[in-house]
Image 1 (cartoon, one colour):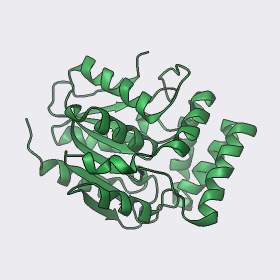
Image 2 (cartoon, one colour; image 1 turned 90 degrees about the vertical axis):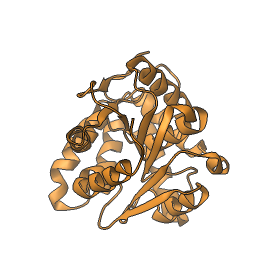
Image 3 (cartoon, rainbow, N blue to C red; image 1 turned 90 degrees about the horizontal axis):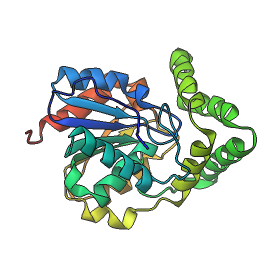
Length: 258
């Protein structure tokens, strides 16, 4: 199975791999790809298995997706790479860093988690409702509910429309399997083994993954840096792209480059 990817500057170094959130696609990283390319990095945005233009092979877990991404990067001669993952993509990035640390130059974890522990009954109810909706009413109903929560402001109408269009491209089987795998995902006890530079980015107004969960993850990672972006939500790469890009580039520029 070959993953779809965007690689607009294959001659540049070093590579920065961008892994999208649940239901999204590589298109969600457009603002970051432009900024990274302007800064002379090689951005590579991937459609994870079953999302966007990548086929679904009947199985889904962050570890399985990480293996597919790593194989693609080896094929592209893009190893080691700076790896950036948001939400679902963050769990894939973590899985890759834990299983193949030699392939990960640095790790940026955006609005994601090492183990899913929603805050209180309301948080658990939200994830239970998402699971119920996608298994009963289907991907369209799930997508409409998600985009309203992630982009709640009136000025976010164009972002809601763009994300819903991406969600519609997903294989429903992959979406359901990915959701179930996130409930089971737990690498919290292995975070202390991460030795590469790590940046954790949190949208201060994230209503999907509690900022406290992200802060606890940071504390478990040796020497991790934690940046909180004010007024940003779960989709910080889209609702606050300038602030996110500055944060990411500031981090990358502090690291040794090839």
